Image 1 (cartoon, rainbow, N blue to C red):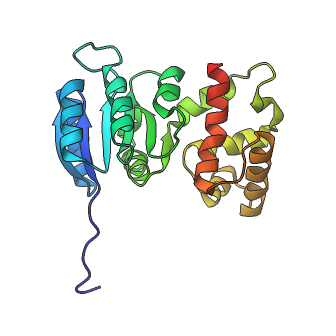
Image 2 (image 1 turned 120 degrees about the horizontal axis):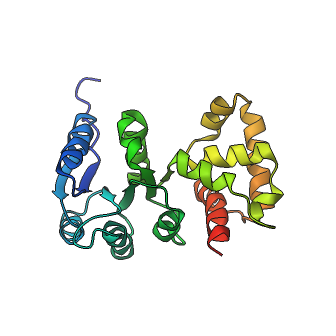
Image 3 (image 1 turned 45 degrees about the horizontal axis):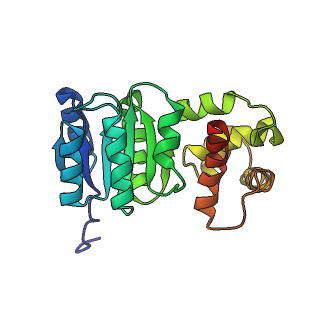
Length: 226
């Protein structure tokens, strides 16, 4: 519409020590309409810049200098503690369930955990960044698939039917009921029925719908941790 003001771009700070990957992520996001405010090559500099710029969302690697172990993850957790309004999307080279659990903690809003290979899927990656910036959650489908595929003795997932587990896996990726229905080739009504059953079987009490959806995944994560 003529005269309509463009939407405000999502503002991002990036933390990644590999200069080629860091520049690649920055260009990818900028080309997709994001505003990249700053970049950092180590965890300490990342935290300083994130606090100074107050972006909508940050994208940071788990392993970063100075320690090259989990410095990026610890910086992300600290940022969530200090500034819970900033979305945090963590990238990891390898699957590690502990990272996802530690990052999410007890608060499911505005957080994401993706494998680095997901950056190559531009649509999926940028959708995850936007979803986390908006206060939603984004968990890597490969991570969720592995976690849901590992059954535990008398755990909460034992209560779910195979189809409900499929729905939970799709739900963990941040998909709406319509998106889940399309992925599983079922009706919206069938998905709604399964989602309701999942909430009931996992003992998740009534609350905001989007929060309950992520809590369903957190229930499993915390059960695994125990």
